[in-house]
Image (tube, rainbow, N blue to C red; front, side, top):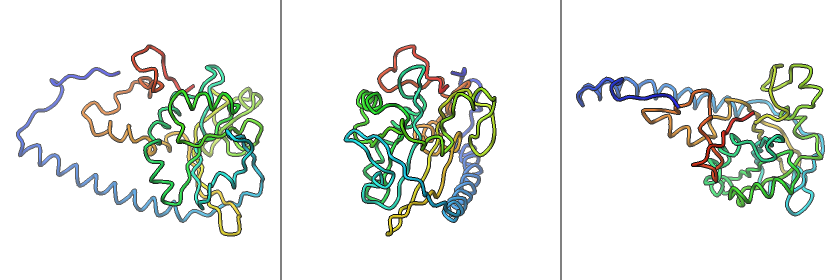
Length: 245
């Protein structure tokens, strides 16, 4: 973490502080308005019909993409990275999942189902889920499915060896066979499914409530290379690093 000292900060009177705060507030309001506009534009994106039949492995057996909606018409899928080198979930994706847990009851009562999809075999995924206390989160395996590859969050050894993969809407080098992302789907009354939105990389920041709170504090995120301070929720106080790749 970065060094931080009170001596580096400007100390002023309350009246001076209020003036500075009001100037920043004007910028915050502008950002809020722009975010609302961007959200409206996001909802106006065209959709892509999902014609392929995807089958996942859940704790109770096979489930289809349609099944994952669980009676709702909106579905958010988080593409949960599996760290094959660690034989467990990605620490950064685990950090994000911790942030999601508390909001599930509200999503599910607002016509939205949230599901984490990972290429880990279901036995390993279920054990990891239990370990970190995510029993309320639906997690399924895409190990025997093309789902991850079709949504550009898993890459073959050949793609990695070639030097570039298709991630975040561009060809780029990537250090891992797995990548994080989020995809949103809608199912109409005829049962047809549409991909309405997908986002990757820093586009996932909005899901991290912890970051939003840290951004309010004097030290902010206080990171050097990004997320190096994050641990699995059962590993704080230990020295295990939490690098995403």
